[in-house]
Length: 232
Image (cartoon, rainbow, N blue to C red):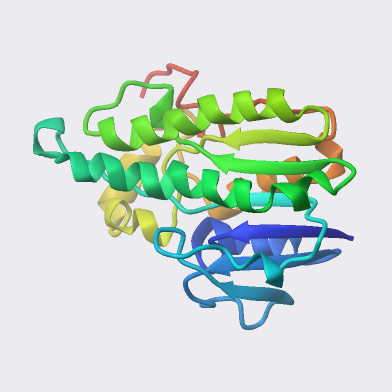
């Protein structure tokens, strides 16, 4: 049984991961609300990544896995973005992860081999209009993850999942009617947008011993968008 900490696990991708990992693991979810967690065998820790300091006294001495889920989808023209938007996206996506990792580093190094899973975006590797702020924040995550993986190998593995558009509450405004769903699906070579289960399955693999020889990698779970150019 592994001790796994999810930051942001009460809805969307985080909740799907919590459900995926619940069986056979001891799961701690640090999030603003416990929405969606009431029927799961998890320990909830109230935590806002922007304003709070994680209460590590509520965590076990050994943490075998950390999954950092908070993110943002702030799509606006560059000329309409104020510097505060860039700062906010960096805080949510990147700085928050740094703070959490630093606060539980002794717990992670106490494990025989721990695993950290972070989240990027297809926008970090593809030039996409209106994505300057989120792409910058997610690009920071990818560079950070590789450097951290090198620094703490072999004790801590660090990998990143880079999804394309996934059906979550965060993405609701892009998928809130059938026309939008159809257009979003057709943009992907595999002709559908992502589901939370698609991402949860990859997170489960990366946090488990099945990936014990994998570190410093960016996994593009994106329906082929980042690498395949197909017609229609």
